[in-house]
Figure 1 (cartoon, rainbow, N blue to C red):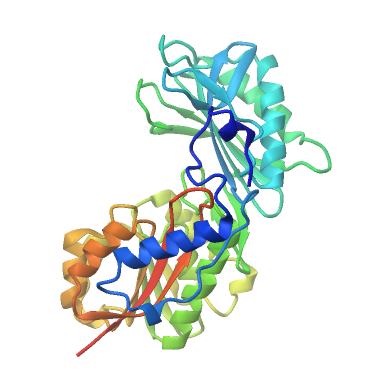
Figure 2: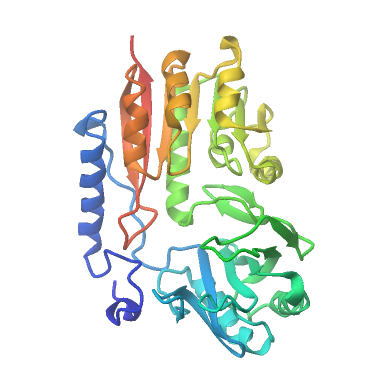
Length: 386
């Protein structure tokens, strides 16, 4: 893949840009396998799940800078000035259209971009998420509510669509981030549309994303991940599954089956509401009758459960820091027969595996969510040995 922004030196986010994709994939596989070599034998690895080299991102996290009437959408340089990246080649086609349309509309809205060096202005970020059905979620991050009316007017215009080939704006929100720090969003959020969730079709099911919901950046590779984990779980045929750090319920719902009790646990109450709505998908009729979701801390849930209520298969998909010492130690002493661990950081995964010596890795697979970068996603199936 070639990128004019990279060649011009204005954006270096894609650290592997210009390297042939097969070499990128082989390099990631080698790096992850080396990091996990103490726990994963060479024979446990399946072939990596690849991605298109470009046009794969379903999200655009746009820093808005520049000046009123002439905003930039993209990133900031080292001096805190805006770098316009509206033509980034990583975006899905529909998302690419949406970014270009937004960039064309912003100059006439009267919205004042936030200027980092002077700490003046209002509009800090626009966060876009695109679904396979061609629908869009847009979150507008302001420093204060003073320009709320202008955001509402822009949302009304965007809901009219960007033509037959463009995505339809389904969900929009206003987020307030008053502090001057490198944080994308604040605590206060107001949904501005009748719809509060974005339906995203992935691996045969529809997941509903709230404005703060986590979802993988690459829908196609996320589908491969869900299908792989579902296949591993079905191979085991468990009666009870836990999905800790379940988010909007992706693993829990894809591993649901008739007669199988599945419990998803997630700290975010919004994500749990989204998961409960996703559970109503007609494609799950007859499969998810015994699937429930709980808002709470994953470690606390595990530690408080009676031994008789522990699962046959434990699925964990923690943030980059991993499950941590407390939960890893609980798993080690829990007696749970099987663990599926999905990780976006092999280093923290290795730390957690070191605290669970009673488990052996049966299957391992790399999922390339982030081509052109060194980031990775890896999933393991672990069996408890005698």
